[in-house]
Image (cartoon, rainbow, N blue to C red; front, top):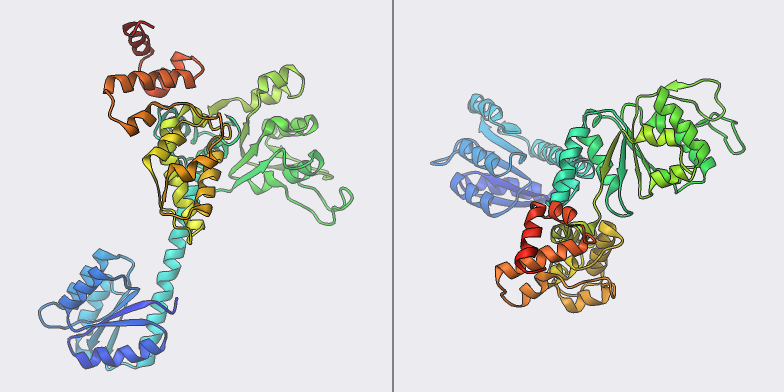
Length: 453
């Protein structure tokens, strides 16, 4: 445990509290002493403690009261009780109520140091386990996908319905739109979440190396194969294999992949036999696979095998209403990676300006921009002066909210301009704009007729 761990000692006999302060301070802890239960509860509400050592029998507010208050404030806070030998039954009752340990007076000081150290270590392990579990969930579950736009709500609904199937899924979307997040959500929301999630980018390796990476090889299968390799299909057994940018996979590998999907068996390079695997394949691409099939660059039978269920990761320009939440989300992550940065927030005008960008690099481009602002920022609040040099020239358009940030304008006018802006962002496709806005397309047509358009 950190040498700065903070311990609260509670005893209405002041000399007992002082007697414990010295050895615990020598052990490297910061020690506060409360001379009664009421004072202890007040201190627990004011400061964060890592452990509490409390006498069981005290006037007015006893150790049970302190224990109850401590557990309400922090259920994981270890409370160690002190009691006279005759009060052991009460101490056992305290353990049933959640106390971590008890000492029968008189006790040895080295015993106290030992059990305080163990309590603090147990608290640290629980905190680490909770953090790792949360990080794993954040990387995979729907919580990692930020946005409440109509497009994202529709995607969440599809993910929840598809996650429980083992059918292959094809995730389509532009580069940087979050296709891997969709794949992770499919894995962690479904029945395979206890199994492995394995990801590989099909463009990152030459096809000869990708073959070995996916299917494995036996020792001596080729020059340099000095030891056997299981391959990603075997590593993903019982879980999910995510094949990113599958549209770039070499034709000879496409044939081998088709065999695995059709038969559930994988043969390592140089092996005499096959091995059965239970793997759900989620593939992703930014390419027009139908066009590549027509060109003979992608196998039609593999396309049909993968295209059982198709999910679309919407580009950022189709969901500008999600940009403020995304920017704040990335700001929090960037601040955690750069704790010395003073940047804490965005001006509202900056968020509106971000909404007006086209974002050809999608969510990844926004994330990188926010990281850059945090790394280079010198003030708590990012204003337009700091943001403007990082915006792409000619990549923005006038957003209705920009004017609304500067002055109050009639709500009907703002609504009309926002609808027109949304239609423009969808390339004039009013049906798509209505879907993103969560309204009926007839509302757009009616509004245009009333305005003489």
